[in-house]
Length: 468
Image 1 (cartoon, rainbow, N blue to C red):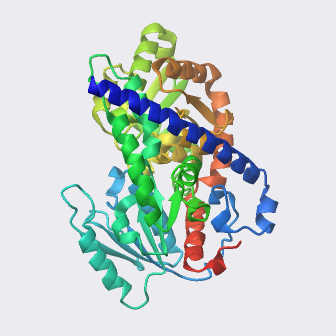
Image 2: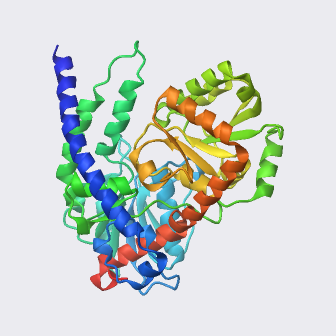
Image 3: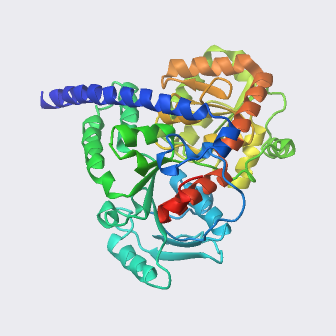
């Protein structure tokens, strides 16, 4: 009986926490509307204090001229990406900090060894072996940091990707910013989904109870980081309202991807279809990319497609699904027949061709964390996107039906959304894709992301740079 009461108690706690979330969502909606109501000219000429700006800094206009000051920046990241095998956090670190280095800033990267150490004149790597748990060795990297901090000019700004630098080391660093690519509170939604879609024969998980404890732990240690960067509007609101971080210490900067790689190119799309023998006769090409694992929603997608193919032969014969990525669900997708094409992982240049070849990008994730790069890559390539109704996605990416489709994480809802896409057809998808790309160029480019971080880092270094 004890586990039963433990789970029921957890549910009561979740109801209470959800109440706070509802209040915070209403506050965020009000703040966001207030900010998004400003047009470009207003944002350009009205004075804005970065430390008090309520919405994503991506909405601001940043000058393209060289920075007023070059910074010496320390970056702590658990893992440096190895080619196309990187996760979202590592890809964010690579894209952002190489862009900052190209702007002239001096980067010192404290990370574990990698086979992809980029050679740039003003980028310096300080490598160490990971701990048995896969984290950075805090004692070793702290010694490395202290040596570099006392060599020549001290670091102007310190940036840690998530808990690359633990809070035990960060508490006395006033010039530090941590960027969060997932927090425990956000994961509660994922845990609820996992429990709801659990098969009857699977054992009940007690992750919900553990997650609430984890949220409390985070609320206790998060204040030990001086500045917090949320990668979605939703997380920014949660940090301010639920984690109770002072507003002037929370900043929202949406993730961005390389707009020079991910852009519309019809010829590359045709080359891709020719290379992988994607029939031109198909009326609709659905695309998925990323890790093909359970928490990315692939059991949901597999079952939805299985049922649709079984009940609707016209859909089955007119649609092809192209899957880029690796993981256990890749082999299972192949069981659905010849109109499921599983390609394995693709490097960025090939991934750009993949997006150009498809009509719509589908992300069925049930992991409510961070801001998925694949959605942003597809958008910048001019594609309509479809994704699960998770707060970060609906609050920052698919904000209306003009740019894409969303669905609750159930097989029935996903089937309904897939049928809607099929009914709308390629012409409507192209119109939505154009709208998505227009918005994406304003918010989701690597250039805009790097400009926002650069200005925030300058502001952290000196308040003289806080007002635009």
